[in-house]
Length: 308
Image 1 (cartoon, rainbow, N blue to C red):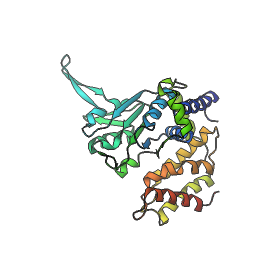
Image 2: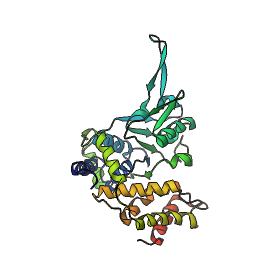
Image 3: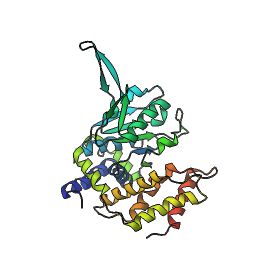
Image 4: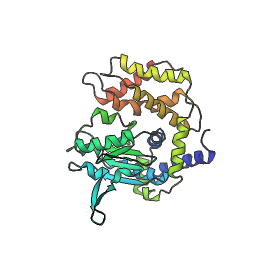
């Protein structure tokens, strides 16, 4: 492996601890970790109260990252996110006071309730890993990971995110309701996010991101990713296909998935595991198909493309 064995062991320990806190959701926990290792950002779309905030907080605690939660509301201003310049009477100068976006893991809670200007401020941070205030560019810390939660659009006060911002999220996942057996454990007082302890630190997370980027993808595997991307563009199920950036994201997330299995080579199964979370929110079903029909179309597409 390209990462030191001790760090890889810490990664396995992180998965175990998160599984004790976010009960009955091992795949979703692993997808969240893969998204971070790939250097992307994560969109959690689900009903209130199913554990979205718990997952974000537990990730920050487990990985030893500085954490900030921002509650997105209809009156949230870009300055509330980025920061403000304050006049210092002693020196006669303005000093920039950094906002919550300068944390290593930022939870943008109920992101689709905020106005467009605030959305744009977050978009620059996500895309460029920097923010600009009064003409001065400020770099964001490493690692920088945004987890945004989104309520279903049919709920009061929500708005659809623009396609350009959706594309900045490497993955979109839903937690859903837990199985009754796991929900019972929760009611009986199972582990909470406050029980999480750091099993690594920010420098180790950055090292793991670098290791994930070096996981080998053979030319045949790259051709498989390309074939999947091309299939979204040539079929009749989608109004528009995946972009080259989406293809690069798919490959990066597949590399991260392989690293979580402690492998130094990407397999087709890794691509298939992350394909729906990476692709679904970027693809608009043709006609007036429901989201479920879009998911079925992705299943058909995976079945139709030959595995190398």
